[in-house]
Amino acid sequence: MTKASNHIRHAVAANAASIATSFSMNNSGQARQRNHRLKHLVQPGSEALLNVSAARQGFTIEQYRQAHRLFSPAHYQMGGDDALIYNTKLNEFLPSSMVMPLSVNNTLPRAINNDIAALRCMSKQANSETLIDYINQPTSRVQGVMMVHAGKVVFEQYPGMNPDDNHVWMELSRNTVRMVFSQLISEGLVELDRAVSVYLPELLGTNWDLVSVRHALDHTTGLDVTQDLQTIYDPQSNIARFLAAEFGQASGDTTQKEHWLDVIKQIEKSPNQIAGHDKCASAITIAVLTYLAERIDRQPWSTLFRNRVWGHVRATAPMLFTLAPDGTAISHGLVLSTLEDAARFAMLFTPSWSKISTTSTLPKQWHDEYRLSQHPNKSNLVDIFQVDKVFSDGARYKKGKFGQGMYVDPKRDFAAVYFSSQANAYEQDEPYMMGYLRKASQCLD
Picture 1 (tube, one colour):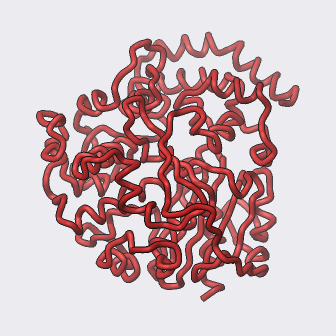
Picture 2 (tube, helix red, strand yellow):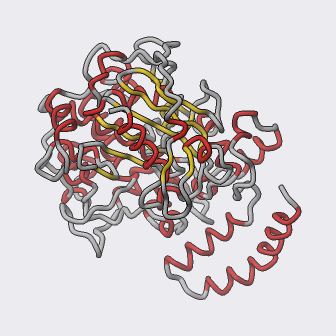
Picture 3 (spheres, helix red, strand yellow):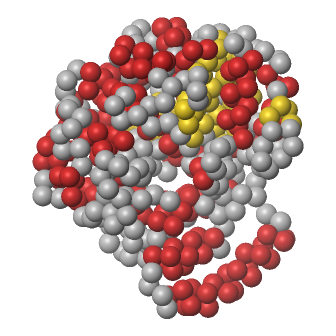
C-alpha cells in the first residue's frame, strides 16, 4: 500500500464520524447506504491497490488473516484487495460442496490462433488496442480468458490466476440453475404458471403466493428484491439482510442473525414493479428457484446438479458450490471452478457439447431455441436463461459482478469465458471484453 493511499484512508477515517452523524440525521435508505458503505471504505483491503497478478503469485499469511477478519458481503462487494483473495479462495471463507464431474484431469485440445491476440476493439473510454494489450493492462483487472471454437481452445491467457486455480463465477452461475430448470420443465416436473408457494408450502400465505415459476425465471416477481449498489449497502434492505444470512452474519450493526428463508418470507410487494411485467434480477429469486429444484428432486443441490449436469461432463476438476449455514447452495453467484471448466459449461450450449459430455444436459427443444432464436421473449422457452445481451445472429452474452463474462455463439460453435476482479464491473452497460469476444467469434466464422 502506498503512503498516499494511507494518507487518503486516514483522512477519510478522521472525518467518518462527523460524516456519519450528518447521514444519521436522515433515516432514509440512501443515508443508511452511504453510512454503511463509508464504514467499509475506510477498512483495509477495500481498495484495489494490488495488481491482479498477485493472485497468481500467492498471498501472505497477513493478507489472508485480514481478509478473514473483515469478511462480509459488504466488504466483499467493495471489490478491493481482499476481494481479489475471495474471488479465488472463497471456499476457504464459506463452507462449500464439491460437485464431481464424470472424470477429472481432462484437457481440451489446443489449436491456438495467434491472430486473436492482435484483434482490436474500440470502446467509449479508450482508443482501439489489441486484445493482448488490453488484458495485460493493470486497469483491466482481467485474470483469465479462454475461447473455444469447435471444441478446441483457440485463445487463452492467465494474467491474474493460474490455469488450475478456481475463481468465483458471480452471475454467470445463475445459468446452472436455469439449465436444471430446462430439464425439470421438459420432464413435466414443474409448471411455469403455477405459484412458487405451491411447490414450497413454507411460503404459503406470503407474497410469494403471487409469484409464478415463470415470474421467478423471468425475474419479474413484483417483489422488493432489488439488488443494486444502494440496496447492497443498506443494511436494512432485503438483499443486504438476505446476503448476510447466507454468510451466517448479522446485517449491518445489528447482532441478530437471521435465516435466509425467514428474510424471504417477509418480503413485501415492490411499490414500483408489477409481477410479470417489470424485470428486477436478484440473487433472492435464484435462491428460491434453487430451493424449489431441491424440493422437486428431493436432493441437495450438489447431488442434483451432479446427477443432472456436471456428472456427465469430462472436466478438469470438481465444481465448488458455497453453502449457507443450513447447507443450502449459494448458486446465485458464489460458485467456483477453473477457467477451463467454466468454458466447458459454456460449451454445453453449443454443437460441441458431445465432445465433453456423455449426454445433452440441455434438452433438444431448448438447444434448438437457443441456436435459432434471435430475440427471446416471454413466449419463447429460451428466455429463462436471462442473458444480458442477444445479438441479431443469435449469439448471447452474460456478465458477472466483478467483470466475469460468458459469450456463446451456437451458430459458429464458439464459447468464451473470462474472469476478472474489477469493482462494480456489472454496472457497465457493455463491458469492453464483450467486443473482443464477439470479434474473435466472427473472425473464426
